[in-house]
Length: 481
Image (tube, rainbow, N blue to C red):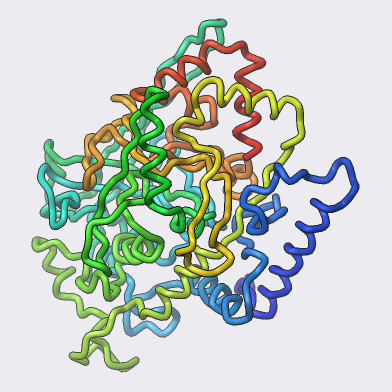
């Protein structure tokens, strides 16, 4: 098979301009079947693409320099990492890791799927680990033998993988008031082939799937004051969202968290650097130490490519991060500049009916339809944009059923950040599945809603009490986003 060719800057420019003209055309045309302005999820930052590439299109107003950064970032997002001094990739993989490139977890920038019953986890399904207590700045305290994330790959024959995870499910049936029965599955984790002893009964274990990557530049640019005002206003609706407060490694201050399933990362750049270390095993200027717990002697003894002086071997003694700042910058820009797909079927009466039911049930108290960016954004096109992600970026108590028992900075073991809903209806097209929630246990939107509890119980019960046709309309609305 010939290697896939990623767009050069001029190719990206043509793509970007094509989507700009296409979007303007479908909105401005007199065709009654053309999408309305209600379809524009993020104004001019919306793409009309609804096929497998729907989450991979650049926003339409990038200049030449930005187009080059986007193309470079996209290429680096898909580039393989290898162990130095292998010549066929980027030096710095491992010593232990989960995947060898960003795109293994985020295929086509989409959401990873959950393993099937009895399947060994991989490809964007990972397991966080910690022990009771707090690490520096309030972060979870890593497991002494396995760190904060189980690594299922090692380096050739020199450094072993830490272990593997096998996922099983227990099914239970929920009966709705109108007689419909819905089967929900609860995952359980089995650790096998552990190389450094048992995980231990007190270990806090949290499986996660890799989320979709769209709209991150917009979410990063929402002013903190707007998010805090949303939290303040929610109390009258019976919910109590609150921000996570996390450590910013660049500014060395405690700031509002926005990204990750528990809002544990402050911005796209740090989220990317964290993923490089945790998923690929590559160091950055933010995280300069290899991910090697003290008991893993082979991991500690393997020479780091951050000290490699050339293709001849790792004999240099001058530190440089394995992820060079230019690579981190370009991937960060690529993620900032991904367009958001337009809504589908926004003018369908059933979808409009579902939107009213969504609001009447109180779903929009946490899945806030509209946020607005401020003047501080990664680039000009992201400033002062009203957009529709259906999130508040706040933590909410989701009840015992979804609890992982693993605190993360100020988030407790029952709290999760409200996940954005945009793009959910394209998940099957882009990623080939419809798995939802932090660990992929929900196999569709209905199951995801029925797992809601805690602060979301009232909205869940309102959904359950609807007629079948109304539940279908609400789901159709969510899948239009």
